[in-house]
Image (cartoon, rainbow over all chains, first blue to last red; front, top):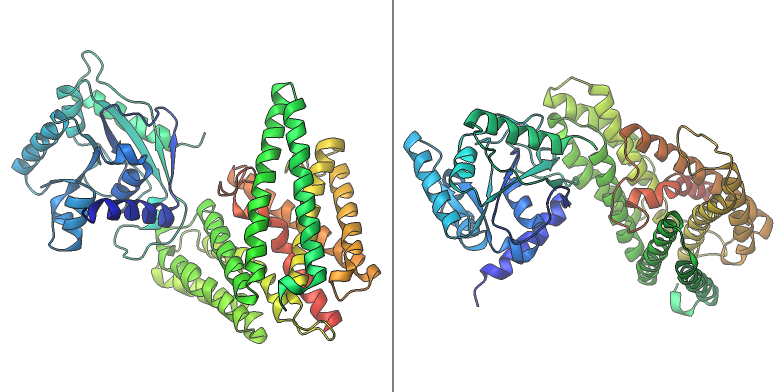
Length: 206
Length: 315
């Protein structure tokens, strides 16, 4: 018996407590289909929030793709990332690093894992969603059987904005939309535009 | 005062338990009798509300039973959740982050600490004076001037309504009423019973007799029939419960009427805020009711008025 599964439950509970996050499934249901959840990024809490919003059985099979420069530090962070979250740590520093990152993402998908990615590449200020990096297109192209599910995270940048250490306990939400697949003949630019529009549409009031 | 040995308290609690049991029975019968889809939804929501009432009553009674400390902690948590719902719904900026941290983790706990140690002099001015003045200063230091007054006022308002006003409910325990020493818990229970019964009865009268809306643009559920019927009935019940309070029967009726009218005003104001923000409920924590703030909107207004009325006339 290791500490990691216990820590995982505790971490999921604490995340839901602090962020008050509710999962709203509007275009898809929490099923065991292999998926890549892609979300807007504005807070260090984002990774944890999507992970914690998933039902426990899905959580165990879903790996957050996280930046090695933040998570791969000796001590608690690395233990959390590697043992508890089972994160896929990638290097985002250099050009060749991003090819390496895509390769590792593809390997994880080949192994049957679901993933959580933030295709903007970095955290925004929470007011708008930036352009998506081509990695998302690469996944859609290479792995047509994997569902790409947009996840809109609301108010996380108000709970823990960029550059702050202490969270303010507002109520965040994670909205899971309808899965996207690459249309026949759709080029990279058009697909990324469509994926971004799907994310933005989820954030608009209904 | 020991809750379990006070006959009046036990009688009142027994009455509440009986009322809840009766409601559950009615809900059970209604669920079996309704046919059309619209009515089915209303009854399903009614039964969800009744189930939540059982839970809320159990939590509240458990807090009362531990004496003063339990009540203070319960209302502190209530304020915390209410403030969370309020601030989530209203626009604040990135520059307000530290200010909000103060509101949640310094001002709100400090206010309840003052209730706990029964420091009346500071309790009554701490948020209206010190938090009020500190909040714009902290936000100004952050340097973002866009919508400055609106942002500042929002945070001040949130603290006033969700923390300051609500804290007057457990503050009833600090009142020293001649001939009624150590029985503040009964006064707190009395306030909650009258305010919540008024809400429930307005809902019941509104659903059964409601026709003429008071402010159609604001809330379709607030009708003259529901409001007058609910407030009148709750005030009569408040008068009939005079024996748990230090009031005479007539005074109990008058105070109950005041509390119900002020509570209605609170519900109206909170509806206006929700309507402006384009939402139906403040949150989702309490099944059938919405958020914490949806449940305590009338209490927010009624608690300080009740507190000061009792303090002025009876201490």
